[in-house]
Length: 221
Image (cartoon, rainbow, N blue to C red; front, side, top):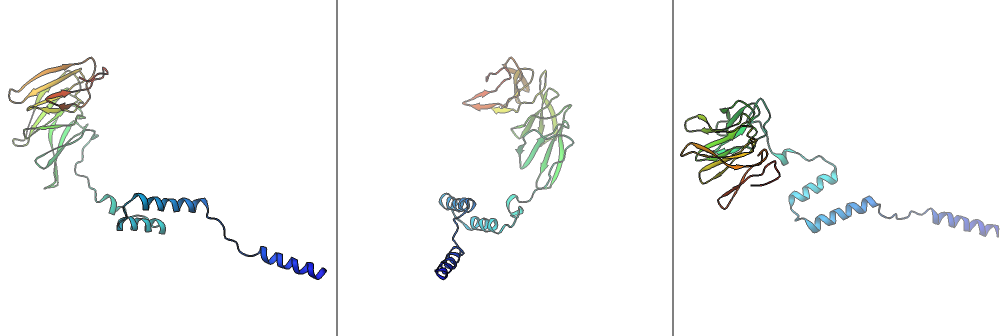
């Protein structure tokens, strides 16, 4: 009897020591689901497969293949908050250093084309091969690349942070003096076309031969 019990103990120990198959961990299940989602929701191509292989191997992605090559093309002495404009294959940006800069990709050169008396936060507009930018010195400036000359075309009573719009060969800019101004290059005249009850920093839009500007008085005109 003792021999039989000893034999059963040996058999029990042998059975319990056999390797068991463990269930997949939550992490493995999550990874499997990710791959299934990719297969179901994405179009497979060689780039996708290569990215999957890179992730699986744990190798870093070469960022040069993603973002390309960058370089500085305009250097200013202030913040560049304004959005640029394009005219005749050149770009123009304003800066809080009181200037508007031109960059020519063909030559790789930059130059100052407008000098104001305060920061330029306004985004420019283009009309008839000329660029227009507002300034915090209360004015809107025109630059003509053909002559290389700048001139003041709109004078307001406060900051011009608004970005202008163009309609029917006229330009429109809002001012923090609560007004929206129109400038006609043919007559060289300015006039107030919208009067609000607060600052106008909103960028205007055009629809069906009408201009729209928002105001700090909570309204759109």
